[in-house]
Image (cartoon, rainbow, N blue to C red; front, side, top):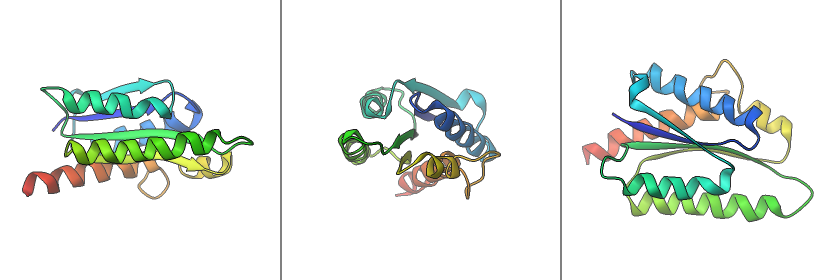
Length: 145
């Protein structure tokens, strides 16, 4: 099984912990380093474009994990990014029958983001870990249909 992880470098203090969680979950489920492709993008807004490109590859992954962190600030930026990113990811997943673990945090403050990206990662304290488990489970389900 090959799994691709797309993560945003924006808010890297959070997203790198989500990435650590996702990689640990995949390895805990038996994947080897060679089966895990990690792609970084500047921000969450760029995740759907890379996801679409991966879905179009001949040797595409069997699942994708998307990781990012959008924290609400004093402007409308949060709404302009979180909605389109979420909508695009689900559309791409459905249109391409691509199992996707959604680990893009949309939080109201730094503290909420910290609580969702703790180390050492477990499914209960790290949304990257949880998203990777979801991606693998959905890939198994899709392959059995």
